[in-house]
Length: 144
Image (cartoon, rainbow, N blue to C red; front, side, top):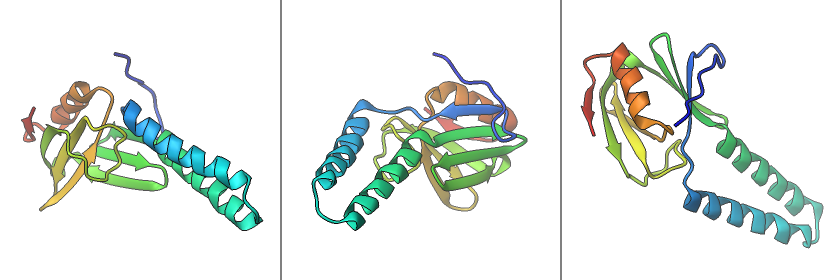
């Protein structure tokens, strides 16, 4: 498995989100079908709104990744960003939890941090991701 190692926005490790085929089909058939349908519709407003929807979904799809550097876990999902100090992470657990999250695969990591916060992510190489995070914070409880 290949991992992208590059400096991206000051972060030294970047992990792309794993993308499940069924999520790809669900999203792009729905959005694509709606976009094609609006091409034949009357009115510019509906076409404009659908074009914005396609752009937004594309931003989410291609802009979901995770960065690790200088004690910070940066999670990006299109315009949405989370910055989690790695020292605040309490536990990491492999899961298949389907809750809405910045993850494009059902093979996810549940990260608990702070007092009671939780986020789900889906890096392509979950094991390497866990290894790097626990290297920075040896107190993290890992449940695989």
